[in-house]
Length: 109
Length: 120
Image (cartoon, rainbow over all chains, first blue to last red; front, side, top):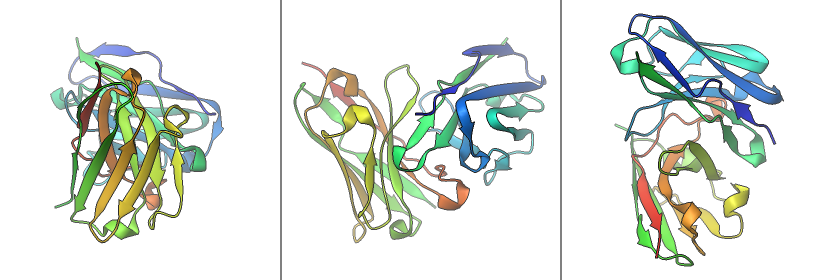
């Protein structure tokens, strides 16, 4: 079973800053099946990135994804107030379903 | 407009049963696999189950295997989750979501969630 780890659990940043979030897989995974979601309090998750680097429909270009193998990243080039939320990476494993990382919370400093 | 609307959540005693529904509109429901994902209070996301387009193939996370059953009625554009032998640790918001095969099997549309509370 693949385990996704997202260090650290919380990051405190200011609007306008650039941030790179990390997602580490316990074994090499296909980039095709790596996605990122944003979740705000009381809301459903929102798909940001699929295939490790492709932005979903309507996602601003300040969000970008990258990485391969066991190390993946989500970069927000310039934080807007609405970007402070929890971010999850997710891997699709076929019949074994999907695995989420534990999430990284972005807090306003 | 695409909408996924869950219902059926509520308070149930340990050992009890609930059936969740997810009515989908604005997309061709029968063309997409679907999944359930849950989130315990203050915790992260956990995959529960998924089902293929015609219901012939299903899969479950180990914590719910043998207790939960996913199904769908394509004529009614509705996804179901039958939950039996409920435990306190099943307490969570349950989300239904569309599986987008061309998006690496990620989920681009989600419902608003329905809360299941298992408590005596």
